[in-house]
Image (cartoon, rainbow, N blue to C red; front, side, top):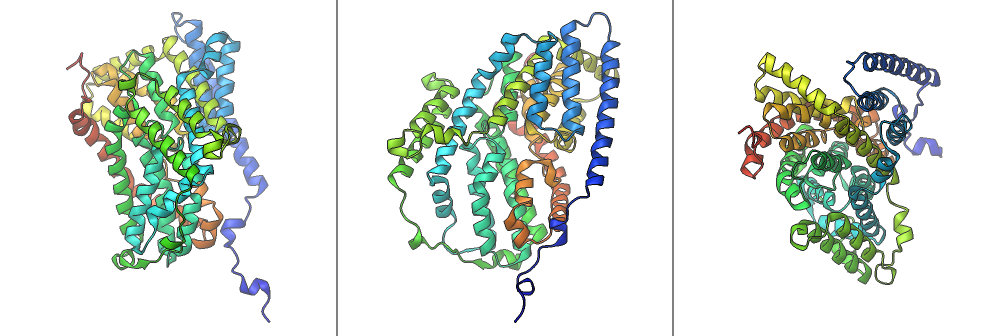
Length: 501
């Protein structure tokens, strides 16, 4: 009789072999030395600034630079780094204690909190899983499965805030589909599709990523017209849809043959086995629909998005009807993201209030005018930087905090519309699936037990991921430029600033 080890397939060594501790320690030491060297150079540079730089401006630049070094080089928690930098500004007098406390009460924080609570109820009552099963049920081809899956995954961006929360929500759906697919190639394609569509579709919703809320805050600080939920969707949803379609087409034809795409896939959950939605699920569905309608119609009823989100959260947590208490829903809130956003708002506002962003804008403006760089070249360079920034700064929100004041605002001095530049950056920064460590959703699917069981090797997934990213990068660059130059102006957002037109 064969032994259990002879019957049960063993996982690939590449999935379970630990990284030697000495290698990890050496890598951490090298990173720490690099970070320390850059910190010393940064401190010397700030000390050598002209005398007309104020104390607040020097501190803002120093703390911002140190945070960027930590986000880029050190294996440190992004939230801890942001809070430490914000506290350092308070302790050194760069930011007032009152301003630090106000960041936690910002309307964007309350908006995200309400959205998180609503999303938690949608998940905990089983509504998300029930709607997903209904969207994917019935006989279908493999190509049809990929298309339907993409639609379901993208739709969650308008209800569930943060790409990490969406990845956690969709993992059961991924595991169920993986057991139905006929080949390893099909399972690999599906595993690539989930995080890719999660990341790219986030651009279409104002609540899709914390970076979008950072963008709104910069618009408010600088006196620009801020975008509401409906206006954001009007401008960014087409970009999200087109980029997702491009990604799905690439995945389908790069990793599957035409015959494989036509091959039938039968559902393991037939329609007769799916019960009707319960009363609690119908109630939560009604609350979620009303919340989205409330966000879309804020100009009509006058309530802010944060108030609508909190009203929807309280209604969804009415336990007699939903079965979910507020206490239970609050346990699923991504408090780390809320604190990170609050701390980065302090850092971003300090750059603007201290005049650092304006000084950088003026210096860059003089340099660009002296070189005579055409605006289209600047636009292409900005788009490319946004697309590649994830290779240095893993956090999507941190990329917005770094790129918006340092690039978008300075380039606006050339006559380009700052709102269009901000949207270009936040849309481009959503491309972050080159490596498994580049974004949390990619890491979640790459390391899941289902992926290890069905795709077998992590190395194979990583190679496929890099291949997809290299093919998608020029397409994303072309889409960003096309939207900035032609499509957004056609939708009411001109590329040239009104004062420069």
